[in-house]
Image (cartoon, rainbow, N blue to C red; front, side, top):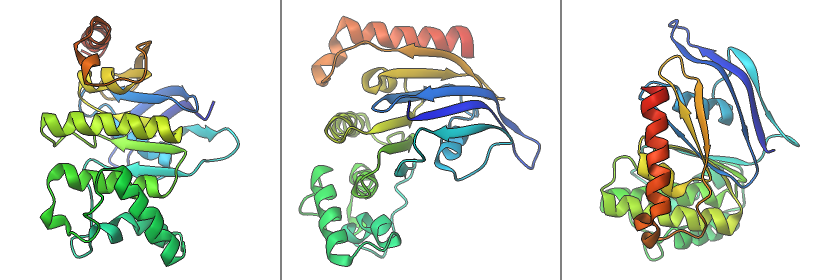
Amino acid sequence: MLLELDAISKIFDSGTVALEGVSLQVAEGELLSLVGPSGCGKSTLLRLIAGLIQPTAGSVSFAGGKPETAFVFQEPTLMPWADVLTNARLALDLEHVPRREGEARAAAALARAGLKGFEHAYPRELSGGMKMRVSIARAIAARPRLLLMDEPFAALDEPARQALNDDLLGLWREDGLTIVFVTHSIYESAYLSTRVVVMGARPGRVLDDIALDQPFPRDERHRFTPQFAAAAAKIAAAIKEKAG
């Protein structure tokens, strides 16, 4: 087990109870999606795992110590004055990785994210999907074991979203990543995940934990299989019956 959340609660200074009694385990190599209604604490849970905020009660623990972790937010959060390579190198610069090594790692990550040839473009010259690819490249350049993703594809059109879903699955399998992925999309969670955790409305809590036994690798054809339809229906039913 890579990660364990034990009876996590989070109350903000405003008095808002965001999470209450959340317990969850994440095994190394899983691609776990969190789904549920807006305001149920999915993003708060990611920030707790990342250590950006602390729980009011309960604990977050990692087997063997906290692994190298990267966070991809819903917005690409790129520096508009810097080119793509510099943006992708940011985390490495903050870790004081030597410049030549950092540039090589960032360039390799950009190539893997489908942006070879765009190293010296600026964010204003990129589409929304390309900006998100830069954000993902920045994350994988840091060589994380744990990747946290907070609705990264929500603002994209469907073709771009599906393409990035496929690319993410490729990176996950190639790098042996553990991914915790927040999404509102039932279909996205059914396509990407090894497990889907359904959370209830505030205060956020775990209502269902659904293991998906669909085979990997998955590609565009998988979206039209009975197995995919059954997985999506199971997740939708859990949201309606338990979160609704």
